[in-house]
Every structure is written in C-alpha cells, then in structure tokens.
Image 1 (cartoon, rainbow, N blue to C red):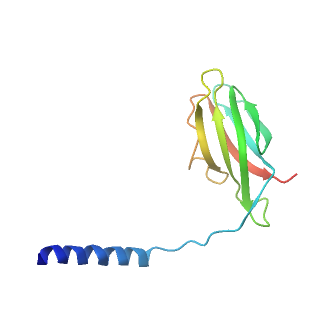
Image 2: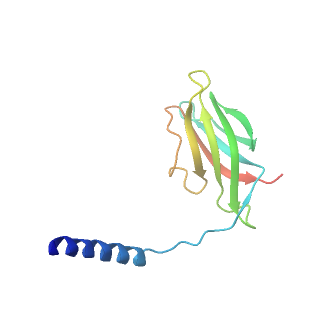
Amino acid sequence: MRLMSLASFALSLGLALGLAASPVAAQEDVEVGTGAVLRGLDKMTGQRVDVTVPSGSAAMVGKLSVTMWECRYPEGNQAGDAYAFMTITEPAKSSDPIFSGWMVASSPALNALDHFRFDIWVLTCTTE
C-alpha cells in the first residue's frame, strides 16, 4: 500500500512540475481575411501558379479543387503570418478530400498536402 501511494505522489509531483515548467503561449489576436492567395506547383512540369480564392469558394489548381473556408492573419498585420483552412479534392478520382485542415504560410511543411504531383501552400490572406 505504501508503494502505491509513493507512486501516486511521484506521478502527481511530476505532473505538477511539468505543468509549472511548461511555458504558456499568449494567444495572438487575429483578423479574418476575405480569402487567400495560394501557390500551386506542378512537380512534374515545374509550372507554378498563384491563385486568389475567396472564402467559401473553390478554384482549380492543376487537377485539384481547392475550397477556401477561412484565412486568418495577425491583427493589424496583413503581411504577417497567414494561416488558412481549406479542403482539397481530386475530382477526377474521388469526391473525398485528400487534404482538409489548416495550412500556415510560414511553415507550409507543418501540415502539408501529400500529393505525388502537386504542392499547394498559402502565401497570404486577402482583405478585399
């Protein structure tokens, strides 16, 4: 019984120290853009295209359909680090998304589209 309570104490102490030692990041205030500018790359041809997609709309990038849901950027800094929520499908193969989530402009590999031919990433949010 004493061993069990010692283990519980050690676990509690470890959790308390871990929580106390972990930094608390301040949440940054953001503004919501009207859409996003995306860059697409055809890895087979090397052709690059920039596409402006309004929020709630879809655009074709190569053979992929990109639906832009929302783009956010740091408050008062439109040129700051944009991040966008989008859904990407390959309509010729399936209506199921091949990507759905947030992409971050400064770290496109953080949550990247995994496609054999195309790369798509966020450049910036639009405000008009």
